[in-house]
Image (cartoon, rainbow, N blue to C red; front, side, top):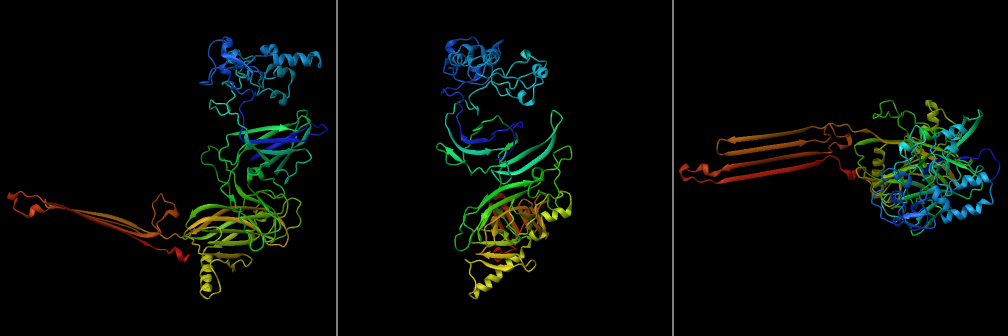
Length: 610
């Protein structure tokens, strides 16, 4: 879950810390806890007491809801748009629950305060963010929106608006039915995420904060102040606790947010609040060789992008050299799409251990010659212990993750902390150094596999053990093969980080633009022919043939959809009347139909050799 949050303390002293809580799962729709579903459109417009029942909170309609829509009769809106307690402000003053509340506070507050409370005992009166009264009093932005979510009177008809414009917040009635399924859900089964917020604890790298933006803004009084926005990224699986009998994330119907444990008034502003997803999943099984490590490292998987992280610390995100943002063809103006990379943040990784992400795919790499990917690495904020080549990035692909795969490993060069020019090619190369670039000819994997097979025939290698060699073009990079993988049947791909040092390491890695290059552009041809013979009234003969050779593809086909074998098809059929060979006076008919067809495919690549 991603969200941008900002704590506003109005410059006062005191403890402004507290908790932001998020619930994911099943939450009760019964806002006023009475076990009954309230909906404004169910309140009688004639005040008939037989059509509602009373609870400790107010009145609830007794008839079942059929649709959620206000009555269109004259004056009906005033009797129905009265909030979730079913009481207007006038009725609240005489209702026992609110009357006893007013009697209790009357002796404790001033007359002016009491009058303001008595005008709306339930505190649910709505006010639009615009208004002549707000303009006269020069009401602040925060106070203008203070009652925007209140339910009583939030759907006035245009003719009843106190202003020259419509002041309605919505046109439908308020109901205790969040998902509009006409039932009242009272279950509390959810995952709890608790985020502690404190003005002194807003540090990047702590408390799920992954980025910070600070800018100087002009205030209403003319002064300038620095305003900070923070990007929180909370992994869905890292919940604080859970309530009720919820076991997985297969059926998440509701999200609830609330603040708690605050002693002082605060304001949280959310620039965005969204669920983010990725195609890469964390690999949970062991990746170390030999003895188990002393500590278990952690890995956070996310995305960094140009629009949100170009001021990121300790290293800001820049687009890799040679890559440009794509212009959205669906927009009338020149609008560039966002550009992003996969981010792996590794913490407390023991010596010899590794962490990785993976995805299931289906690829045939036999017609490609090259694979490339940009790689970046930097130390975490405040970490001065990690050095170049202490960690390495590896990419693994094959038919499975443990027994049949190819692997390529690159020692990582770290980018120094700083803010880099987003438009400078030299700065881009510092963030995405050439030494980290995954750039390998796929034939090197098959060459290593053949060498391993020769070693195995001599009794010096095994299918079940890793067989490795260093890349002759880049001697620091290591190539490994295990089992019997095939470039023609790639079903799994893994990208990970391994600790090569003798100490526990922390590192942040970005990977971007994983791509296949140099497609084997061998052309093919296709032909199709048909021959139809009509032998007078004796019969007909039909002949057909179809040939497609390796490399042939239609105009609409992608290059990876071209044919990789030779296809030969032919068929023949005849339909004759054998009675024509006898005298006509016999009037004998003997129709004969015969058909024969054959199809042959001739593969041009033996996948077992790759």
